[in-house]
Length: 112
Image 1 (spheres, rainbow, N blue to C red):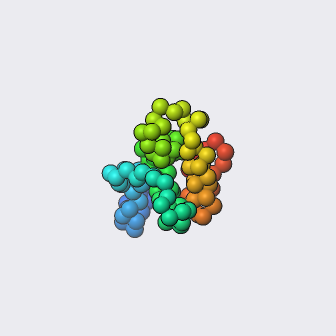
Image 2: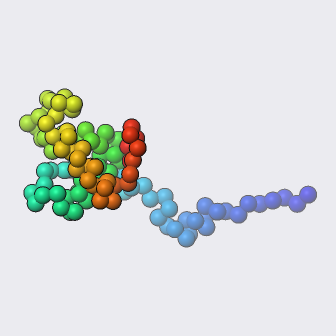
Image 3: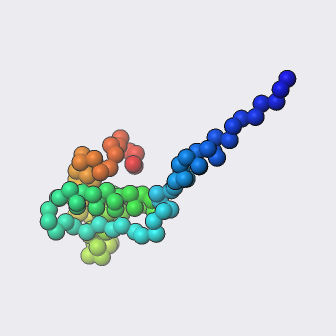
């Protein structure tokens, strides 16, 4: 029986798509942080919310908690997350960012 040799699919993919092993979490050394909007809830601000969310996710943090703590600054550093005055506001910003298409849809209990 003749011996079968599978084609080197990985090499073909690497040649066709040189960015195939791009890791968005490792690609950037910069940390995106979030501050309250200065011009209202503009599309640019909602994109910033999405970038900060993905940055927190790439760092292995809980995104909503990380963004809430960033927005509150040192003033609320000792406040538990559940009692943080910006918690519901940041949750709304993330919701609006998802609705605008800057973040993918998610299901309850999962982070994406």
